[in-house]
Image (cartoon, rainbow, N blue to C red; front, side, top):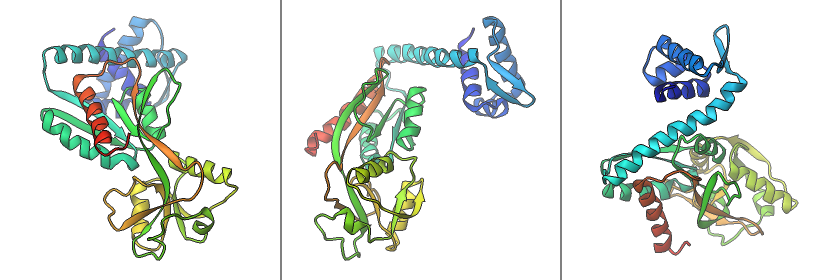
Length: 296
């Protein structure tokens, strides 16, 4: 069993398509199929059921996938430990973020690059649920989101700061100067809202339920930037966290007058995984920014 074979197996298992997996790995499909077959032979089990041109994981394959990911990750950790030991400031960190924290991430990434100019920063944007899948499969090193603290022993979740649920509207709107606004008033407005695949929408729906309120969205969309584009057209309003107005200077956030509208911004790491020196620096950089802005 070789590390290369495990990497081939994991990518094929994630895509359930040998052709796509081979393309992603820059190898031929025949090479991929041969190496996976060799892996199955060495383990004396079938990892995939091959049904015509389709494949799916067997029960053994499902079990093996978790261990394969862990083995690959441990091999990468060992390499990183040695690099840190030798003070080699090279490599890559992969940071995931929900849209509401992109501004913080990009500011931190710029400062990080000044300290580690030879380390590549890969940024992955997505919903909290999407990023959670990636962090559990070790596809990203950490994520910035509004996921609350968790008792899950596979995750280390650290609080950054608090943010408030707010009405987002254009500065030209007559209500843009309000200090606060109620859900009852918001119900009068034409609303576009995030789709239910976003944690912010789930949080909003839970808050409305607690307040015995209902809001009707004219449009639901699964892209926050596009949603803000619609609000920027002056025809719509939306509800997001007050940290979400990145790159939209003509929009304002009016706090909503209600209980339980505060969420905690957090940084999350997979638990029990060695954190490379560059990643620790990135974490400390973000925490330092929180102190400087009195957000902690």
